[in-house]
View 1: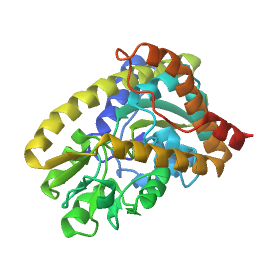
View 2 (view 1 turned 90 degrees about the vertical axis):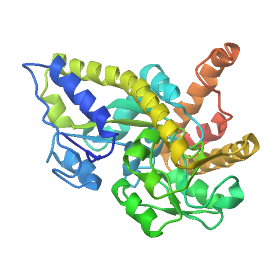
View 3 (view 1 turned 45 degrees about the vertical axis):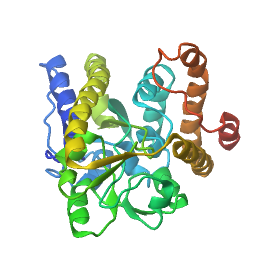
View 4 (view 1 turned 180 degrees about the horizontal axis):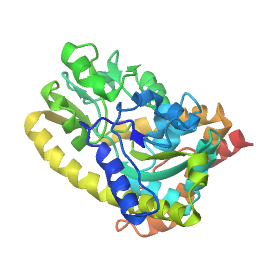
Length: 334
């Protein structure tokens, strides 16, 4: 098993936690030999390597494969929609896990979601961003299909590059700014050394999911008991990852607060971003039946859960986002 992450980025800790737990649970039945990103194949080739059976398993962020199928994008993150708990709820109890396996299954893989983080940090720049006007004309490293379309509507320009290239691009002024991940991961990437400002919150990725792709033949070769233990390891790591990354993000925020100037968009701005995000979601979903199916499931979950979540406010698990209309997505699926 390999991963898309180099050992220098803290995202790899979730992969390591899963591997360690899986090896303990399957002792005597299965041993996972884990390699950091780039040790076997380049990060961008992990999907193909698992698909072909060159390696049995690869840890990923599904959004990297949106070029294969746009449905991988919402399986990885959403613009201004799901938070981390929403992803956990949806995966575990509202049919999300089946959709991961349906989409990855089209490429001969089984997928075990085992990592989740809350919203990403936001843009790191050397000129402050406090309003949408400040995005005009900016060349910003941004990952994600819908995220890029949304940024363009807001007047910015998406630049795609691997995480390991961001530091140097910022340092040389090749880009005006960048987003990458949560505060702790960004700190491990050293972005505080080459930027002065941080625009928060990260409306472009309201949460992210990570997991492991397993070649179907390799999975089928395992006993049902071993498969179940791997699923248990994934479920346990999913919950662990939320608490781990929130604690680490909190610690990193305090360090960033001393190193850079932090600015937050006002609520009116975020409401405008939400409206535009909804438009982008519907347009993107309607261009791809699989994407529409995933987004419809997500919005139906939000509508269903809203009844209890809103009734229990403020003692609940986050906000009910004013997301896209389910009927518009339902028409795309049909």
